[in-house]
Amino acid sequence: MNQINNVWHLIVKDFNIEIRQRYILASILLYVISTVFIISKILQTVSPMLWNAIFWILFIFTAVNAMMKSFNQEISSRELYYYYLASPVEIIIAKFIYNFISLIIMGLLIFGSFIIFINNPIDHFAIFIVGIILGALGVSVVFTLVSAIASKGGNSATLMSVLSIPLILPIILFNLRITAMGLNILGSTTFVNDILMLLAIIIILVGVSLILFPQIWRT
Amino acid sequence: MKKNWWKFLAIILMLYVLILGFLMPLKPGIISVSPQSLNAGSQITLKVKTYNAKLEELKSADFRAWLLNDTSFAIAASKIAVLNAQTIDIDFEIPTYLTSDDKIVDYSLVIDAPKIGSFVLPASIIIKQDSINVSKGKDLWSKGNFKHLNHYEGFAIPFRNILYETLRNTYFHVSLWFSMFILYLVSVIYSIKFLRNKNQDFDTIGSSLVEVGTLFGVLGLITGSIWAKNTWGTYWTTDVKLNMAAVSMMIYAAYLILRSSIQDEDRKAIISSAYNIFAFFIIIPLIFVIPRLTDSLHPGNGGNPGFGGEDLDNTLRLVFYPAIIAFTLMGFWMSNLIIRYKKIKQKLSES
Image (tube, rainbow over all chains, first blue to last red; front, side):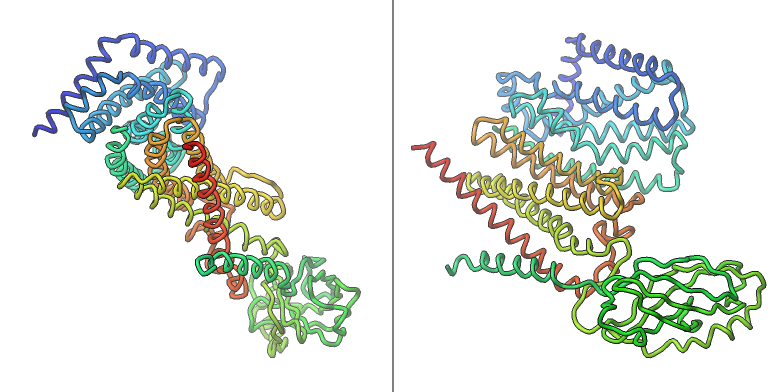
């Protein structure tokens, strides 16, 4: 019970920081909207296949930008304070959940601005939303651990993008398939199969990160 | 000396692979036939280009040839003449009726001779018929006397169309990927060992294995790329297996960047070990799961992503399995040298 409480408080703390430093949220919002605007100006007509590809590219880069700060903002003295208050497993679970929620919001934001500024080729809305949620889940799992690694590695801005983009590829490929089904580019016969496969990969990665994170955190 | 027996084994196996791999000849085969489309009821001379068929040693009378679409329906050649070291002229009298009720039927050409055995170009010749009479056709096509085939004398690797001599690359390209994966697996085991008891030696071993494994991976990409140029006609395609392999190399390149970006030795060891374990679990779906979901030019669809069961012949296995062992042992030897270099460097910096 105490652990769940700790996790909850850590999540609330992250959201409080987010709300207090409003410029981070605003800058991500501006980043998304201006990029979508540029895309819509460059590509006058966008085919569903291109729409899908651009959506995930923007999703990854926004996520890299947003996740970069997920451990960077923890100043060393505050880090020491957490070290006494909560166990590393609680800290990473809290970060997972916080990143997951913020990525879903971000994904929906990108989705919305795509519909407004580009066009709306969605056929099966539910499948596409499932794709966004699973994408947020997978990306948050990989990027949380990678941002912890990168923040311990010093030069974190370049390191974060070098480490995270190749690692995210298997998850993004599954998500591309799922959202392609939502756009009716791909037949949805393998829908359940793909989701189970993606979930299996994510579960393995969550397990690995729960074991590895305490080791990184202690350095 | 006793401790280093495996290094001698590596050298012996490597020499065995190089010598046998390059010297074992290819079985005879047919490269091309012209013309490829015939009419039923005509008399035709096929110009057949062969490979490794030892035509200078054999006489025209030694050869037998058939056209068949099933082992029970075949016609024999009426006349065979060896032209030069590569080409044979084979005369056939095509019967008026074929064995099927289709307008167009494809037939395979089989050539047989003592010592070199029989060889075939499957579905190589298309025969067109105007009038259809299946029962008469079956009667006409059963006079081929297709039996008592010879066998190849000696050791030779199979002749495969398009691949030809590049088949030997199996020993290098595929073995390099195998031994790369073994090296990565062992390095993950050492990374786990390091995280358990923080012995700096384990990290040195793990990171050296990753370095050699990445070298093997890059060599695997290069050999594959050269092979693709010779068989598919291009160095690189957008094929899923090629791209996943390239991405896994990027992941390990990122590992090397990560290691060089951290100055503090203890921290470098812990963080890179953690990354190594995490990366390995992402490599597994990249190499073993995703290629099975999509179509690919690369051999081995539906089963093992590397190659299919039918692609390996027993004579290939004779060299291929030792090649895997040889490359793996070589990899361990190379990483051993890197480990010693790193330890000496560490001692020098301490003193």
